[in-house]
Image 1: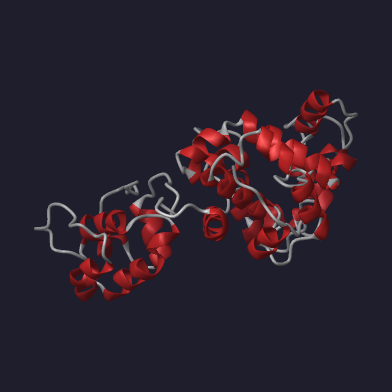
Image 2 (image 1 turned 180 degrees about the vertical axis):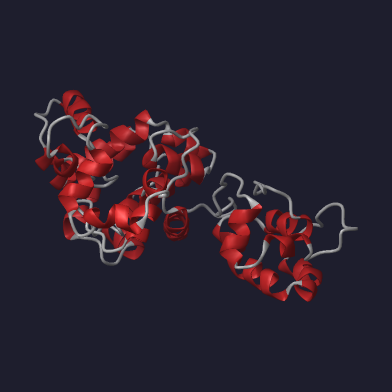
Length: 304
């Protein structure tokens, strides 16, 4: 069974608030009881999600202070993607009004002010009057939004959410998309894409460097990405993706060695350079080869 030390946490997140560090060390028995310390995948995914949600264990309560409409659309794409800057102007630099806009009327928020009072707090940024009331009932606590300011309580909330969402099972599969969906969207199998996937991936990599097991894949599996999404990240037109490698190639070679990229690099230096630099971020080299060589609509990282 794994353990976590103060130096481990500081290595993962050097700017972590002391109260987060102290709470984690003192609450390891809770992680142990929930099975989170049973293996490296579980612990690394748990720590990565907490680190992402708290900005490296520096954020206690969610900030809803936004200066630009584009930031609102990025954080709540389904809610704001079709809104103009003028539509969103009144929500900028106004945390309480934004909170009511995005949280009131759902997540158990039924009273005026609930959206702001029950905005995200703690290790997994527990959000909503409903979630707080549910967890408090199970823990024998009197529900109050002030509990979201208390790291010790929010660690209990986080462990309950993790268990309720079957995140141990998703972590055992090393499936960061399912884990992230469960935490960020409330459903591991839903169609809503979790926000901040790259950051979650990066925190996982940092956690794996501390608690990971040698010989096991260190890049978490993720759901397929469309060619449009990949080319947007690369900064190249979709048509260029299918033209990188010869059409005569019917199947990707063994790309366990990055030297196998030589032919691709000669035909599409910009795309291949990006792939060589970033492939550990989310996919195996073979998956990126499929995109670059054939322009397939989806890739899937191999788990070998």
